[in-house]
Image (cartoon, rainbow, N blue to C red):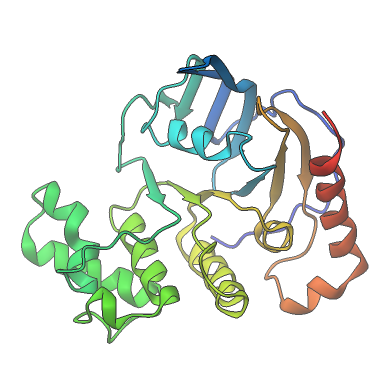
Length: 274
């Protein structure tokens, strides 16, 4: 599938739900309260969002606003206090790798396994036959640009290579939705830019729906079809920004006035007092 940029311009601040047919992920009325020694701590408040199939949506917000908590709820790894989360029209109550893949901030590869064995691991848990596991893992290695590194162990790979293996592991079960929690945060700036560009290449070839969390406003604008801005805790959606830059994205776009205005709008929303 070829992704075509939405050229309708920047949307206004519309905290309500964006509905629509073909939504891949739907979050309705989600709130969450943590219980701790100091009592009840509200983390998320009345989150409504809809991510269309095949869209690349980025979530940004100040530290501690609940971005990762929300992503873990979308993955079925954490249960919200209130509200519903649907993936492909059905509730996501527990991890379901056939519908949702997750790439975490740390690659978390098994050091005793090779790159291809790490990618095969989710399939092994499901008792997929060995020949089929290897075929699919080899295909994913090629997709992420690591053809020829199948036999390397994690300590033999750079940080960027490890994250490529992690992305391949998230894709190997072919879920329609890929959730990514600051996957490039630990990388140096040059590697991070390269990985962002590579991620867009992979996305354009797989037609996945991607929900991506980052603290980098430049990364958000460069990657996204749409940026969702969250408030400080308790986290709420306070702005939706349609990124009308054409695809494929190029590094040169970062120097344009349009790119700068989009980034500035996000920054103004994050820095303003609640």
